[in-house]
Amino acid sequence: MTEEKKRSLFQKLTDKYRLLIIDEDTFEHKLDMSLNRLNVFVITGLIALFLILGTFLLIAHTPLKEYIPGYPQTSLKNDIFQLAEKNDSLKHLVETQGRYLDQLRMIISGDINPGSLHRKPPKKFIYHPDSLNLTPSKEDSILRKEVEEKQKFGGQTTVNAQNQFIPPAKGMISRHFNRTKNHFGTDIILKNNTPVKAIANGTVVLAEWSEKNGNIILIKHPGNFLSVYKHNKKLYKHEGEHVKAGEVIAASGNEGENTTGPHLHFELWYNGKPVNPEDYIDFTP
Image 1 (cartoon, one colour):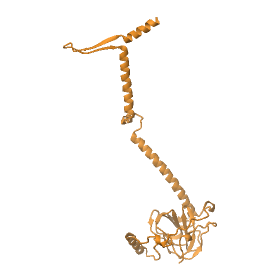
Image 2: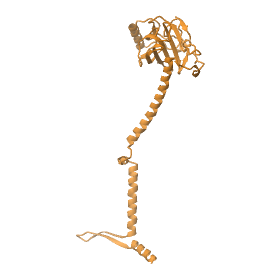
Image 3: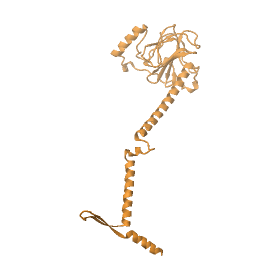
Image 4: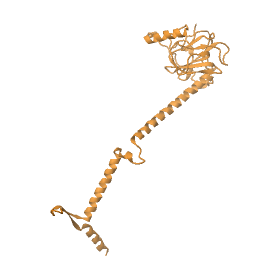
């Protein structure tokens, strides 16, 4: 009985039918085709598979996929990728600036652990005169003349040919650099209101008053150098200003708790570590 049913089903699938398309007016045969159910199922299945596959490829490899709800747009993905890169860059920048600000706070407060610093300072940063081009440009000459006329301060305003830096001020040294005693600078005896100059071109990164050190100004110079000027009576520059070598940035004084007389406490830092300013600058009057 089962075999008869199976045979009957197969016969139904293979039974042939003729498809005729006839013109109603002329009764002319336009199309004459012999078909069976099996052929129809196979052809229909192949057409459906082709449509599904074509639709998938069309959506996967064309911008049409962006119209599907929940599918991210290409521009949005690019924006997310760029934002992720910027976020990483900003995170690194914030961490770097955080470490830099921590160093500035330690410089201002003097709260530095000598054990965390290198015992040996870097070699003297000395240039040979023959290797330097000290001829000022036209713009530099005009700027220096304007600064001299406005500030009306005398003294040296050009870079010493044998050293990278010019002295911030010249005078008798009352206390030298001493790493073991936590004295990371050089104390220069000066009268009140003596002009204090920038030792090199740079940018002011800090200019404020400190209870311990009075008016203090920090300048960042090329080559990872940082100069520090403490106990000033008055500051002439603000944070973010660019200064030239020899430009007056402050007037010396006796401000702050850590001073017993008018003088300039000057520090020089290289790569985040204090170095002896006398290795780089001649303070002799």
